[in-house]
Amino acid sequence: MKPSLQFFLAGFLLLILQTGLCYGIKWIGLSKTPLALTLNQTQHCKQLEGLVVSQVQLCRSNLELMQTIIQAAREVIKTCRKTFSDMRWNCSSIELAPNYLLDLERGTRESAFVYALSAAAISHTIARACTTGDLPGCSCGPIPGETPGPGYRWGGCADNLNYGLIMGSKFSDAPMKMKKSGSQANKLMHLHNSEVGRQVLKASLEMKCKCHGVSGSCSIKTCWKGLQELQDIALDLKNKYLSATKVVHRPMGTRKYLVPKDIDIRPVKETELIYLQSSPDFCMKNEKVGSHGTQDRQCNKTSNGSDSCDLMCCGRGYNPYMDKVVERCHCKYHWCCYVTCKKCERTVERYVCK
Ligand SMILES: *[C@@H]1O[C@H](CO)[C@@H](O)[C@H](O)[C@H]1NC(C)=O
Ligand SMILES: *[C@@H]1O[C@H](CO)[C@@H](O)[C@H](O)[C@H]1NC(C)=O
Ligand SMILES: *[C@@H]1O[C@H](CO)[C@@H](O)[C@H](O)[C@H]1NC(C)=O
Ligand SMILES: *[C@@H]1O[C@H](CO)[C@@H](O)[C@H](O)[C@H]1NC(C)=O
Image (cartoon, rainbow, N blue to C red; front, side, top):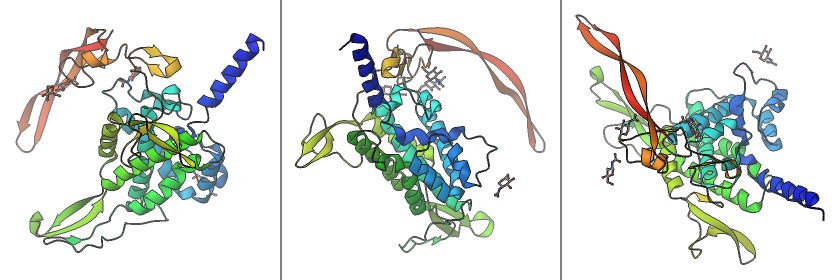
């Protein structure tokens, strides 16, 4: 074989291996939908970014859900960026959706987090939209079966978690249910991590109450089951990201399963995030492995967490610079009842990685 042909074939193989793995989170590209687009006709579905065929079909038959799903895509990006702002990998590449770089195209720990967060976010957003009356197909969640304790009664409007889980997983799992997309191992991993996201969402259901009674005396309370904020769910998932388990696809009996790589005597736990490919340390820029590096990233000299200059800059050191911050100052209370303040400028020292 001629070297050039060999090179071409190798490149082609690499392309097959690298694309088609992660159709699963391409729907985050819905975040790019123009705000002005009103989705009231089924032919609009084809214009949306990042959807696989079965998702376009779901769009056609559930048009009224699509605004909510677009909102969920925006929530995923916002929440992921916020949750990882103090880390070397800061989720900035999710903005490229639906055309990701290698950090999210491979079966990495980072993509495991994004799959889990996406699955949680879509069900969270739908469940909340039921509560606010934005969706014709659902309303408040059911009144809990358990009898209320002393001092409160059931009332209000519960988040419709069930409806959120059903419609959300139908949409976000659709790419992994396609016959032709990606390897079996990748699909299993993505489905597992999506399910972990939904587990954390389910576990976040908590009792929320409102007080009634004479001038807020709280002699009567009504309570309902509501979901925690997506940001809190993302923090739970970040902890799972930090302790994620590397797995391999291994035959056991007649089928192949994902099992932990190091201790393959136990099955994968339903509560842990799993990944197939190790990530780089994200210290240096290296596009071949999807690392943007941390040069010029801001770091915190007094923190001893992941945003400390030591960890963020990987020991390369850092450069100080002066930054101006504007604050409210010399505030005065005026009788009755307002406060006026002046604006003061203060310079602070900040640091960026070398
Ligand atoms: C869809 O929405 C647009 C903009 O609000 C409106 O002009 C159009 O008549 C609507 N079409 C249908 C079929 O409801
Ligand atoms: C996130 O990381 C990228 C790549 O290192 C960097 O360009 C970007 O400024 C970072 N964003 C924030 C908000 O720190
Ligand atoms: C740096 O970290 C310290 C300790 O965690 C924190 O109190 C401070 O607000 C941080 N500073 C900045 C600029 O983020
Ligand atoms: C910094 O590290 C010390 C010792 O490892 C720990 O006790 C302390 O809580 C840490 N502080 C912060 C702000 O993380």
